[in-house]
Figure 1: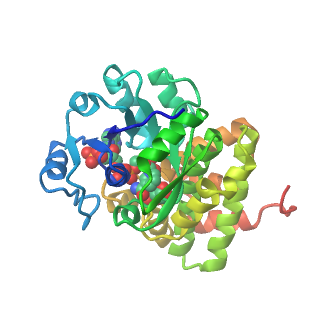
Figure 2: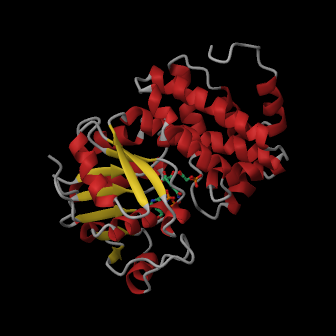
Figure 3: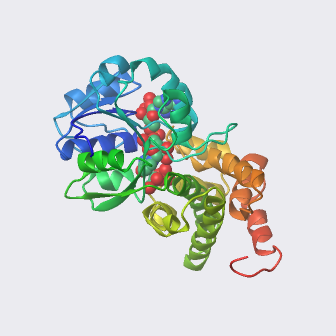
Length: 338
Ligand SMILES: NC(=O)C1=CN([C@@H]2O[C@H](COP(=O)(O)OP(=O)(O)OC[C@H]3O[C@@H](n4cnc5c(N)ncnc54)[C@H](OP(=O)(O)O)[C@@H]3O)[C@@H](O)[C@H]2O)C=CC1
Ligand SMILES: O=C(CO)COP(=O)(O)O
């Protein structure tokens, strides 16, 4: 039976960490956010805003914040990890001694670690000792700003231990946020990581002036390549037709709120990687790193992911987006599902 979760700590006070903390508080939970910068913690506590990340959003007064991880984690029944993927290992390592042993660990991060090629829940399991599959993974079409404004959305909470997913489902259900459970951790996590790379490609296409047919082609072929990788790694193919696959692809690839799409759009308009990074203002576009780790993961399993490969070539080999676009179209002709 699922345990009732009342006291939740969110580690990370960026866009999604803060918006998800608001969801939990709106669902009646006692929520403490850890912010890396003391001034952000003070703003959340005192002004009930986090204007740098979520301008125009009023946070519930019951949501509090601190920059002291020990204070944030004291008594937590669930701990939500809301830092960028490539920083998760270092951050979590610094918090391990502070994690309450029975707390449910929840991951918001959408990425694959460079070097180890591990999914985020695998990194969390390795460091925390929670068995593989025991971390609850949150994914789906969840643009933080829309959710922070109370616009309706759904998500998937994936965990091999169904009771843990239900506990987080109960703690995060509100009138505007509808979480579903799933046991396919591999599929849900890979969907979230891979769609960021496809969103980069859609942004790039938009930046080059291409329209809806091009977007739809990239979304659909992106779905095909993420499903190819996922099923090879043991995921349920149906997961990719759900919120963590198609749902998140549609949201991220089509919204100007997406950091990945915006990043790609700048590259498509001719900005350099450094210019696009500056314009992102320190916020994370996970696909820029994950295109390399996912490409390597796919290659180690003999899976063909041409769009991901193209994004790696643009972001890390300096190849012109027009050239990779032409190369994608000029590939050997094949059957749609081969
Ligand atoms: N934003 C969204 O709409 C959604 C995001 N996600 C995923 O959630 C995860 C977190 O995203 P999000 O909250 O949006 O990210 P942001 O870039 O908005 O915020 C990152 C947060 O992590 C903190 N942080 C701690 N250590 C580091 C570090 N080493 N490098 C950078 N930041 C650090 C930042 O602190 P500081 O402020 O001091 O930099 C900030 O509080 C990502 O994996 C993302 O893909 C998933 C769904 C929706
Ligand atoms: O994951 C997201 C929406 O579900 C957010 O996408 P971006 O990181 O591209 O903003």
